[in-house]
Image (cartoon, rainbow, N blue to C red; front, side, top):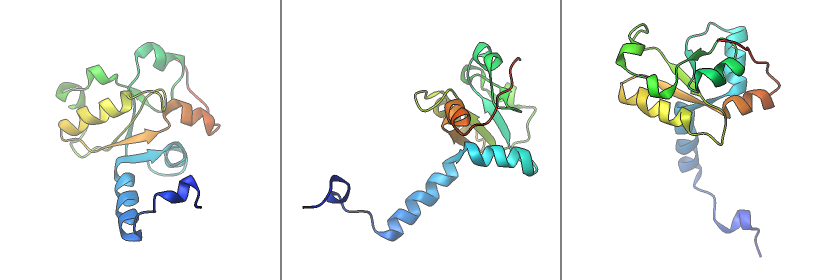
Length: 132
């Protein structure tokens, strides 16, 4: 008898490759964001899409606060059209980053979600900035 993991067969390798490659077009992780901000030219804008109060209590260093409800053409006008936005919210229990990504995509902007959000950032052992 096979395990519960093995009872549903794995997808064919070609399907798995397509699936996992596609996911990387939609998301990045905390470690990659941290590495990029510390060791590479930052070629993206990191957006904390939580409320200003939550942002002030602690946020990823270098992140701009742009709550999901405030995302619109006017707020984005200062950024070139090809700017890659990386969005995050509180963590896996929060869908604010997903909602923000939808709004950015609807406005024709490149976007990725930082999976794990602030919880993931802290879990990785990375520090926070405080204040607005």
